[in-house]
Image (cartoon, rainbow, N blue to C red; front, side):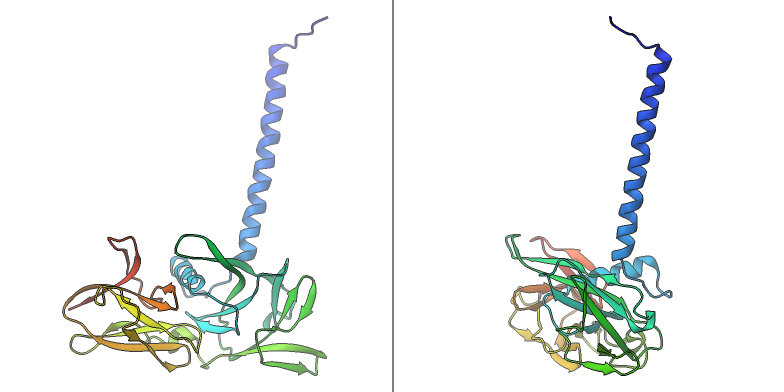
Length: 270
């Protein structure tokens, strides 16, 4: 015997399926939003959202290896090998109650093939802070930072901690406002790169026919590299290099795509 449901029952059943699907989709969206918030760092309140995101993205683009934590763009960058299933970090100013998960960064060669992966966490510098103590959580085990030689025994808690000390007693952004790429007196340009200390940083651009070996920057203070280059009036495209890695100028927000498909920083000499 063939049963036929009334039309209103069919529509009611279909509507229930739609409501169920909408509920599932909403839950998935909320879950993804919550995950995104977990991985997104807390920024300084005196910056706009656009400025915060721009500085954060520039900082991520300049992470190329695992090493000791360092200051850049008013952030502290922590890194770890991408060998563990989970790596997190907890700080003293939060009472070690919050574990912030690391994110993964994959590096690619010129052909677009992945060459290396590493983990990182970027912390916006807390106000009026000169040192930070922290611990890592690697696959469920608390540990000091293997990449940071500065560890100490905290007698109050009875545990070993890693420590990071800032170069200045004031926030890096305020202390480094003069450390930016800009035209100096005359037609010279002072190019400034900010990054980890102890690197070999080179400058290349339209004024060198993109030869990356002509100009090597000098590390004038820890994490700040500079070079003065005389340039005639005009608009120039440039990037920094660390080995074969291209580094955009984090101190200069002017960017452009060149005719040969490069993403480069731009400066105009008047």
